[in-house]
Image 1 (tube, rainbow, N blue to C red):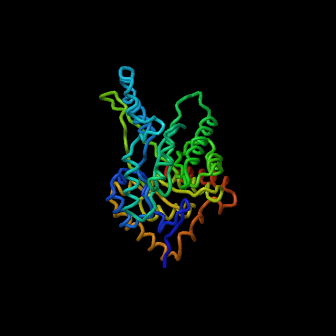
Image 2 (image 1 turned 90 degrees about the vertical axis):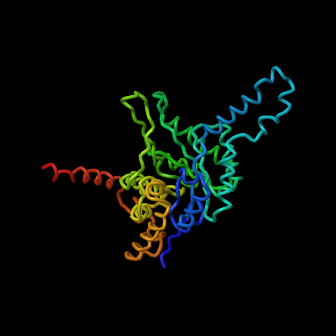
Length: 334
């Protein structure tokens, strides 16, 4: 019998398909549908640092407003340190979803700075999350900021969040680091349980009629798989942290490639948004059929079989691959 089970962040999953953070997880019924379709785990939509700090500042403003005119006004409220502020609806949703399904539920925090907002990591754990994914979505624009400064700050942020938790922590990264393997190693040494490769930065566009910068969201396609696939293959076996591949996963072959490169799981959103939650069942069926045909008994058996760990000269392999890719155009031009 084909065994699709895997482990991720110390959690036992029935298969490597994980629904990544998206609007789909804003409703309990959607998560239940994902579970019924066969999903292995779900990452809830992200709670943003800005949401927490905004609500905190807003509440602080209203609690202090008028206190100079009415000295007794502040006695109506508890001290700010003990006041339960922030987007409680998110924490309530974590609890409701955890009660409604049996699959692992992973909370998500999106932020870039250290501060009081990271206390919500512990609150998400207390709400019932089995693990937490920290999404570091940051594009440096300051020409004075050095790469070491940025990386040091992010390692400090991760360490601060990790200190809040007793559940596993995964960190979702962008591909834009000068020496990604070294940075991944630093995060792993800091105690991170998993790395998610990669965050897709949604590039803004310019409206030439209104002369405004406008947001633009484009769903991924299978071609987008190649970037995270390459880096999963490079990192496999070199760090302690588990690896999750996200971006460009749309069919069973995409999932199988990710496993061969060394991923523990894949995270999917675009395919579900484009073609429905039912794609989960179809992808799992396709994986089973392929594995039977090629005589693979388990996901564990194939994991890392096409990683750099299996190549004698990884750096030379990268150069050779680059040169071959360029030469493939020769016949088309000449």
